[in-house]
Image 1 (tube, rainbow, N blue to C red):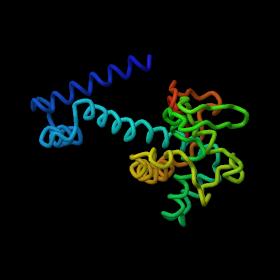
Image 2: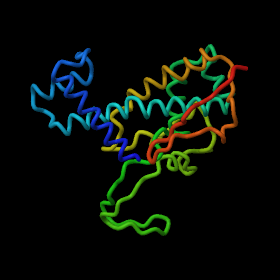
Image 3: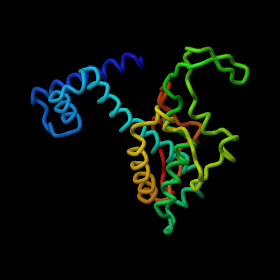
Length: 226
């Protein structure tokens, strides 16, 4: 099902890209139009690279950030004392920044990293991994590692340092990290202020999660005003 959905999305992107080239699509001065224009003028990107870049921007700019906001709100609703810290009159930008990092760590919007190939043989906890073996790294598990994060299962919006792996690491570090941090820093405090006192409309363990292998995001977050 995921493969079929991805194929349909690629087909849609091909249609949109063709529309930008033909001039049939309105609003040509947008991100996709700029990518198409720059690629056609300079030859900097092949057709496959253009489509893949558009796909990545859609994924990073929308899906993962949506999960950050949804998962973050769920965590805050489950920890009203921590939520109150963000809505307090003296909550400054430093607290907002550490809060976003902690929410990324506590319930990462990306559960698994993309596949890796082992560069050399290694044994981890009795499991032998040979050179060339394909492995998947569990970001959600790493971000709850008690040897790295004291009281790892505790939500602490002021936690520092906070070297979580929600954005990956090294050469695989997420290209959209700055965008996600900015969106989280704007959206989460604003939602808390605008919604006012609310609680979950159903127990947290009854909430539905969207089916996905890599992403971790809620299908919906029903709340009621208190």
